[in-house]
Length: 385
Image 1: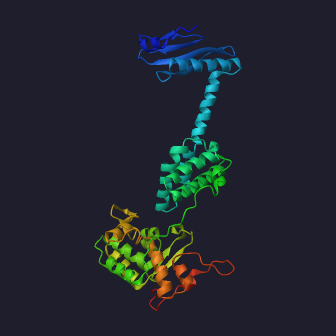
Image 2: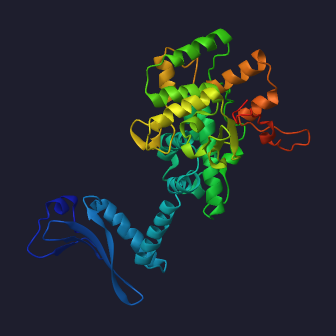
Image 3: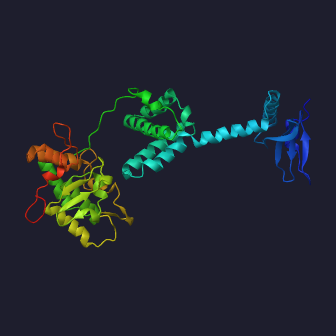
């Protein structure tokens, strides 16, 4: 017969020494002089007296404590030590936490994303923290089912972010690949979602391709009143038409002044191949101007926030907006499409030359990559032709 009531538990006052209020079957409330109240259960197992902690009041109510008490008595009846069962369950919960989607996801990000571009890292982390961790972050990675993952991706689709849903699916796949390799998952639920998401229409970066409009853009850049780093980055974006991230992260050690070329290491390139960019006389002039500023930064275009960082990825974009160009008219990435169109349609350059300059893979009929260095043309002065 139970002796305690919920009211008695609430009204129990501390004393000079700790004391017990018995309930039944070995369960009691232990009250400390500090006023803390703990549920305990004294039992015998294998001829030894033991005590099991059932929780702290008021987090664990009298009714909850009695349920835990009955579970412990049931364990004893089935030949198990409730103390060991509790340890085993805690170990399981700890392992579930260690192998949760978020824990492994953050480990993957730390180990596999260090060499990726800043923009890719930021975009991937945003997807993880905004769309994936809140829904499945605490789930053991082995336990996430295909329907559960699809439900998460459908929520992203529902807000009209179809492209992000596809990116999220791709990111999940990369995390599972890492988890499988490290023995913490056996299968990847994202593999079974092929074709399950809405098709996303690839959006091309806005670019200006009309010669007259391009001429006006060049005049706007020439008269731009921004910082030297931003203005020079704008100029080289148009002259060299490399990817925005490659422009921003250009370093002085990569400039070969003797041969007038920019030598980008493979680690910085999207295709993970080294890339040589010939420098026109106009490009060299821009670089010489930046060099004359005597910055202590290793970057050609240092951030205004500190020489240890490159120009922000928003630098060129914001400059274009300041000059009056909307996101639908021109983007930092749009200089590449602009150059490709003008070089091909107006200046009649060979398409393979253009693709080489864009650092795109160009292959021969047998599928072998052409040696792009054989297309580098030089003047007698060593500059790019």
